[in-house]
Length: 133
Image 1 (cartoon, rainbow, N blue to C red):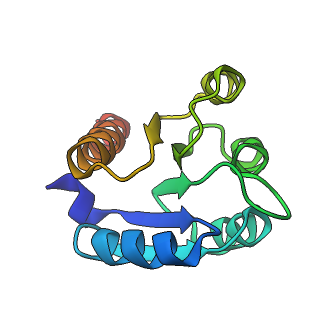
Image 2: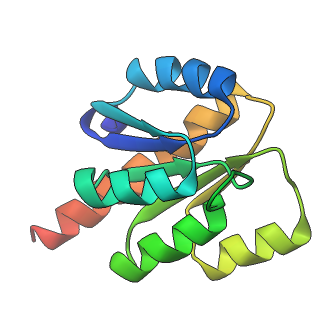
């Protein structure tokens, strides 16, 4: 499974959700980094350069969309997934404009979650292979 080779930065302000998803991700990914808000997430992104950024939208200090904008300024090709309870048309539009890789809705649906992350892992792997040609 390609996800096993990748690092993931998970940004979530709800500590209960953060702990649960971190445990799940640690079983599936090579490395998992966790931040509690967008500012912390952006700093950790710059330090760790993860393969995938997985973020909630509504958080204190800096929301997930604002953090995604800042990350895309650093690396326009960065793979980002949003994992949120908000199915708002404006959020979806902003995510599309930012070329967010996937938009997953809470509550947690294991099949949807892993289908989305494995899809992103395959895209990353394909990009890496094409660069090596």
